Image (cartoon, rainbow, N blue to C red; front, side):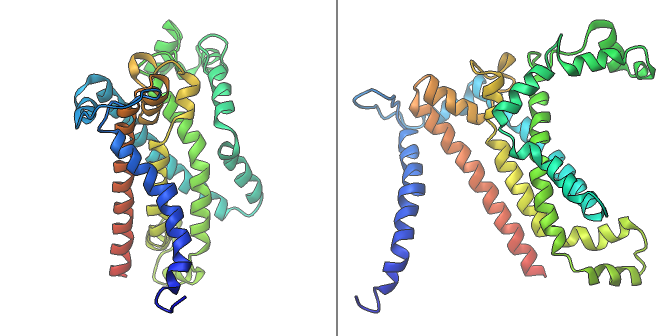
Length: 306
């Protein structure tokens, strides 16, 4: 073994695994996205950009993009904000901090399929605890709310079967399940903030907790926030378990919860349309790659200016 080729013996296994495990499946999906291949067929016809034209022109896939982006735009900011708020509260508490961490992190550790079944019972229109609790509040001061008064008069929403509420209900469950993970990431970021900065800020006139957060905590959490937002966006695009548990035969009422991962599963697995399923997968990977590049640019920009 010569000195010039020695490095290949070290990086070779990693390169081989990267090609076989990561790049090869992406390449296969990319090739299949230009065909009408189905499992069981001896061959496939080359259809070019027809699959992509269907994705960006047909109303079904328009609903897919709409449901996906509505879910992402609701879940990401709320799960990030709640995760940050929970981390700040736990970091400032003197007692029961570990207990709070465990409670908030429980939804992350729980099997989402099992939790989806629990939520399905809780949101049942007649025997579910949510509507039962809301009905008990009728006649109280809460009846002054127009939405609540309307529910008292005509019944509360069918959370999972009404197309006007289904995507927001699934998004609420996504927030419930995801903000504990973001809390842990923010807690790790808070531990890296030097305490001397708070003392220096206090000497410079930062007397209130808001001033300390605005001048010290939030700027120091910049890299953590970029990472948390990126991970939250990717996890939100990957939502599948909840939708499949609630709506195994379709994307909810009027396709209102027809998210991208479920569309891939429906087309490629249920309908055996591997070509269109691969095309949706490529579009999904393009979104993820775009977000990754944005994260890298933001981090490098921050490092450059600091």
